[in-house]
Image (tube, rainbow, N blue to C red; front, side):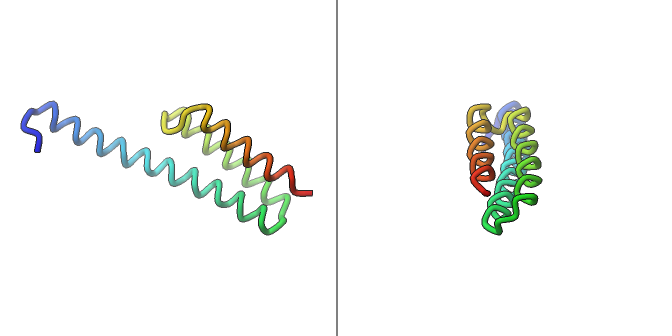
Length: 87
């Protein structure tokens, strides 16, 4: 256990940030899952709507510093490609 005041504070701050990051990552996973479910159901309209929402969620995660911009770009690209393959 930390004895120094600044070390104790770091522990608290890190816990708070970890919880925030976990929440954002969970939201991204949920948004991606909604796109995947719509694709499996062959519902082009729902998949497109879910893709738009997922893209927004992933971009917000980048601005919060949870994901690197290239990681987000890759995720969005793969989702868009999967939606576009539906015909």
